[in-house]
Length: 316
Image (cartoon, rainbow, N blue to C red; front, side, top):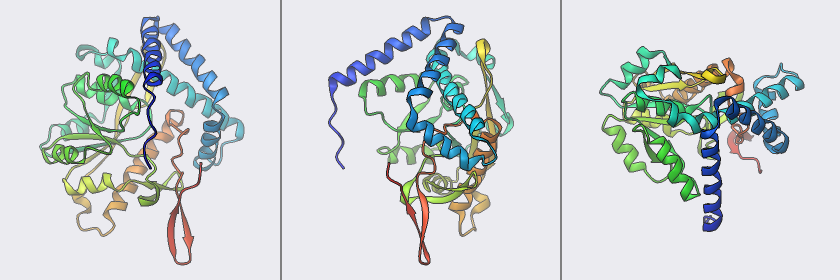
């Protein structure tokens, strides 16, 4: 399917609105900026009915013991978390520096993280739409670790340049999700450190694993890269552990997966993929309000037809 034609004037106006909003947020005192985030969350909850329904359906499967009222409170908290995260990202460049990063983040499982980052082998950092995944790459860059992140290129070219400048401010480099396979391979072959989101629906071509007790389609490429390039996988989450004026995150290593352990295993791709999903689920269960339940993680489902199982992708 051909891409929709862009409307340059609309792209520019959207970019201008975002830049003005960021400038306003950066100029506000922190209490006012956080109050603004809370207001945005309340507004988004009211008007975004479609994603509220998606979140409610996902939480029904993930936490079947929760009542409707408890799910609703969790959904409201989810909106609040992500609106607050956007505000924090906007002010991060003005707050975080090499000498004060400990004010905003703590390495949990630092021995595993540092051992992998200082080793000669390439490293895959696998995370999810959980906590503040942008903070991890920014903070590691501030500490002097050169990392790469696989990211989708935004359709709006002005916003793409703006976000890319933020992400690369402390040395992190971006690799386009669809178009930079050769660069990705060269990076891993050269012992690079690459971060990727591991909780995205892979459609009909994915491998199905259990995620919160429900089948979820996952990309095979993460496990295949780990095996092909002999790259240990750090399963990392970045939950907010303190809110308010002195917000603070944990850069938490939940698991280290060495592909050498699966070298002789016939279903290595599925086993590795299931293991990192189990690690992600453990972190999310500790801070469920900080997971992006609003996206359709379980969009594709296996359907049995006779003796075969095929993937089914529901229509929007």
